[in-house]
Length: 358
Image (cartoon, rainbow, N blue to C red; front, side, top):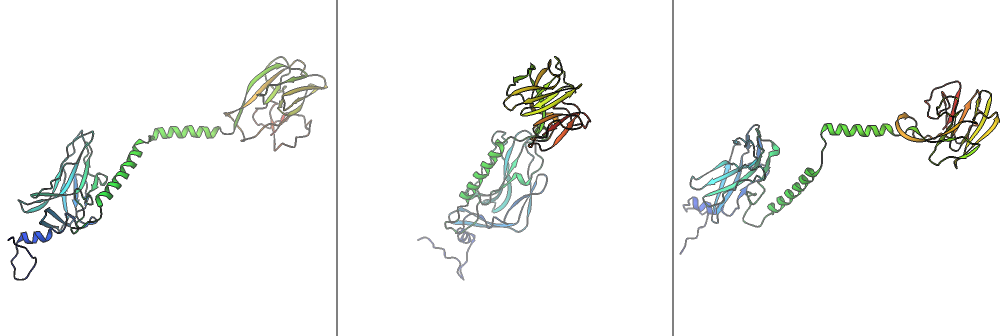
């Protein structure tokens, strides 16, 4: 009949196998994933493994208690110059040597998909993997970002517990790793600017901001004047020249769509009205100064060439001769004087010229 070991009892002599059977009731792993056998970077190729307690259970009726009372420094081999690899720091129990030691398992360099080396799980050699260390090609130092803590992974280490169903740490760790991989994939898929590219994009945006509210004009129409004529819809204001020429100077008259003006020059005065519907009429007041003139039509455009207030619209233009010829319209918020009667002239106070109501 087989012996039934009852442990412990007074007066009975026990050997290591009897104690090993008692320790076999606990599953393999570190005692605490917070403080036992943690791996940290120490600069260069060195890492430190903290003091700790662990158990290994290489067989059903065999268990071993492992205690390291002081932290230990482990030095890794140099990284491959052209290919990356993954190393492992393991706590290895060697039954033949009757001892446990810290060992570095070097991974196989592989640029495409480096994989961590296999650990041993036999009755004679039993490993607890404490950490995986990423070794980028040509790297000369191990950083905290290179170290992955695997103590909570039950497939390679785990936290020691009595032989009962415990917390599924492997499943939880797999879920966390999947989430991190998803976040990394999202980061990798995004396009990031270099500093030079970011500066260039910033300059483009700044130029667009500078152009907001900047107004200039472009000639889109030219026709011989008549007492009544229809101006195209895309014309915002007209300039009447004093002859057949198309040169704009201070002898011209300028009228915005929907406005009117008196133009006096060399003792002759004409009234010009530019209706909102596009109808342009020239009325003789004294003389007929614009009888042989051209009508030039202009359209407002946004440009950086001529800064002005955002949203302003010219609603009335009149010749300045000490007093205005017509009352300023009710819709006018402010007036400005130009050096001549050209609608896009720079705002320059001058005794004679045009009053632009906007």
